[in-house]
Figure 1 (cartoon, rainbow, N blue to C red):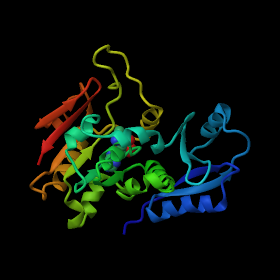
Figure 2 (figure 1 turned 90 degrees about the horizontal axis):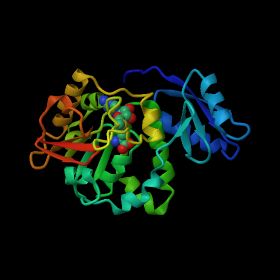
Figure 3 (figure 1 turned 30 degrees about the vertical axis):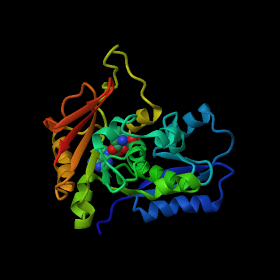
Length: 285
Ligand SMILES: C[S@@+](CC[C@H](N)C(=O)[O-])C[C@H]1O[C@@H](n2cnc3c(N)ncnc32)[C@H](O)[C@@H]1O
């Protein structure tokens, strides 16, 4: 196994946090081979805007905040971000082909195996898994991978989320590395989903030309991850296709784009589903 250099990361914890809570987060880091070294420190006083600004300006490394068992957030500038899966409950419960463009594009069911190769906050993974499909999630950024794992642990404690959580498998890796490491059984996906970072300035509403509201999570994510360049788009597309090539019946690659964005990797899709803000391009393999 190749040794990867680890990066320091501050873990500030509030007074409700127990040593077991901190140990549990450290275990997630170790078990998932996330290259972070956590420096745990107690947080005194309220976490108000002034304190957030102080913590992020005074630190030269990423800052995480732990507020309870698996209640982990990343402080990016003054933005405190976390996957917040519970806020998606209504959407997940109602998710279907009528309400979700992604599900129209993916056409999956409870026998499907899906690879979400760019997991981010995991919101699209939840929609995909709401169909009963098994979802393998990949996330390249160490901080994001840790947030996802900790959110999965937190949501597993809610009885009505347990089945959904059991269908998600989270790995900290890139799509490129995953393909290199994959054993045969890891490669038979019905759908490979790509939602790479959108180009800067593409969060616009097509009708009125005004900037569409960008969630604080996405604003923060732009500080961690850049949109792929042309060569990276080609690589991602080739690898995504490779992972559903062995499944001759229903393999498809789905790419999420801003509605007016150029084609990903200059590839012409077989089908498109779109609304005013977003487009899902489908490629049948
Ligand atoms: C736009 S976000 C995805 C948002 C996600 N669909 C959601 O619902 O929250 C893109 C994410 O993909 C990750 N990423 C980018 N390139 C990647 C790669 N080659 N392999 C794995 N993850 C990647 C980034 O770190 C970022 O977190």
